Structure formats: structure tokens, C-alpha cells
Length: 114
Length: 116
Image: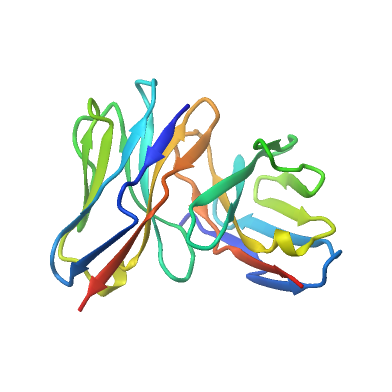
């Protein structure tokens, strides 16, 4: 069964600095999709970034980028120039294509220190 | 684009009441909708997946007679919590996705349900 593990329950970073959130997953599939979602205190889930497993190039969205290591089954999120508005819970997710559903990790609470 | 509207955002009601939560995709056709439950400080737990015009597929341990899901159109799905009890109090979130299946899910703002 596919599982997603986020080993950091909490992280903190100084404003304007860079932080990396870890995510590992377990799968026997060769083609799949990975996502990072952000859940601020408002509780709305916001898509941050998406990665297709067949693409070797790491996805990037402005200050957000991923380090996708397929062989290691690792999918970390790097946030550059951290801003106060980045404070939120961050969830890593894996798309089970056959079942058409997302499997979420436990989440990492990110705090930004001014 | 890709806005999902969930209503109501907050419900407080007495035990034994049935509560209906609506989830609408405003600017796209949602071939698949999902209902999640989230307990405080925990991750999202998938309750069921529904495809338009079909019966919902429930996750193991989720009572389908307790949580009725209807996905009658490509823009609307409803979750009805029947005869709600205090243990049903939680945060319920819907999401919607258009075809194909590799498209990202877009989430509603969630509904906080409190059963007294």
C-alpha cells in the first residue's frame, strides 16, 4: 500500500531565510504524481506545487521548489525567502492513480519567525 | 480559476439532527469529488470518493448509511450526516477534480460541524 511520511511535525524558520520540508513515500508504481498542499489557519487547502514522477526536472513555482529523488522516494519542499504568510500546515500527498485518490502525509507545521 | 465553494462553513446543531453540506465547483466540471474529515492537528482522512452519476465509494470504516453522499451533477456534491451525534463533530472538507485523473484536486474551505 502507498504511504506518505513526513518526519518533521514542526519546523520554524526566520523570515527571509530558506527552509526545507521533508517527505518520503512508498510505492511500487513507476508513474505517479506528488503534491504539496498548504493549509493556513483558515483551514483551506491550497495547492503549492505538483510533480510528475516521469519528469526528471524538479518542479518550481516562484519561491517554492521541490527536490524529487525518485530512486530514494523522496519529495522535499524548499521555500526560499520565507514570508510570514507562509506559516501553515504543509501536507505532502501522493496520487494513487488506479484508485484516483490522494494519500496525505501527517503534515508539518511551519512557523515563520519575524 | 478552479474554485470550489463549500457551504455552510459552520454548523452547530442538536444531537439527532441531520446535516447537509454542499460542495460546488464554480468554474469547472468536477467529474470526481472527494469528502474528507479532519480532526484537530491531524491530517485529512478520506471518507469517500464520488463520480458524477454514480454511487460513492466509501473508505473502509466509514458508514455509508451515516454519511450519505450524492453527486447528481458535474458541479454539485452533497454530504448528509444523518442523525448526527457529538462524536460526528469534526471539520469536513470537500474537494473536486476534473478529468483526467492526474489533474490536481481543488479544495473547499471546509465545514466545521459541532453537535451538541
